[in-house]
Image 1: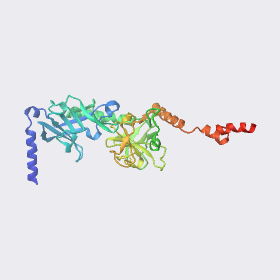
Image 2 (image 1 turned 135 degrees about the vertical axis):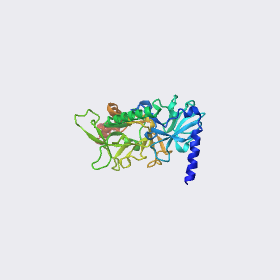
Image 3 (image 1 turned 30 degrees about the vertical axis):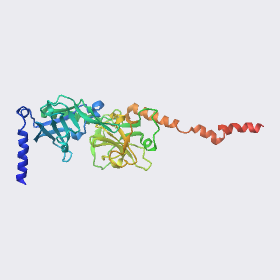
Image 4 (image 1 turned 45 degrees about the horizontal axis):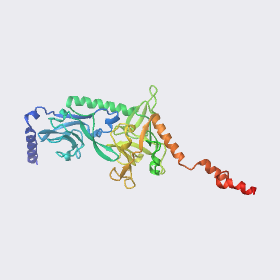
Length: 359
């Protein structure tokens, strides 16, 4: 076994040594993949999942006369790796895709000797209405070790501040007031969701926030909220028909709207593939809903677009929810008319009766 390992290491070292002198002179021991603007907006929705960002270390293997780099903290399996192909440029993808032209991210800079020398935009997969498309991410960069470490720490601190300052309440409601009528499944999930507090005695990540309700906090005020995967957890105060608590959380590379018992899992009734720090930063086009076949399963073919729904915050959220409630009220049978008919004071029959009596 030692001999086999030695042969393998020798072959890998030979592969790295085989790099041209021009490439070897620029090879760095590690590079950092960072995504700026983690506060949201256009680029945030296309940023790769958090576990794809961070430090990548040099590997003893070359591809296309270029070095390869592997994520330094990821576990085995679908570990992210960087590689190069002469006709397409630099890729970032799962290690089992190494050398292929299929990956999560790509920069078509075929002239760059190393990934931190890339000057062309990085493209990353984004999800719109359940379809995956490649889009340029202006904030996605690969940097050298010294610059990259500082940038990563800066972005992480900014992201934590954004999450902590998030609105205390978000509203799940239709984008337009004249959206088509929802079925019972969708209608039940429309409403207000408040940041979830940590139950006493439960071992969860603790997070301070002086603005628990989205308003200005008083001096010395402090609340502890529930957080999963560096994102807030939200809960509805209105239970489902079965008495379950509806909740909103982030897991993997997506936001999930489901039940409290599944917080942190890759399952729910709705989901949106987005690395947004806050749910109100997610566009309506990203949301999908589980069909009857898809309920209780991870997102896949049994999920359908739910593009008429979105999370809002602040006054915009309150107004969107009010519009929805008013629209639903208009679609119900008029209570006043029902009352008149029940008392005999309205309707065609009620008007015909006096004429018959007069005759």
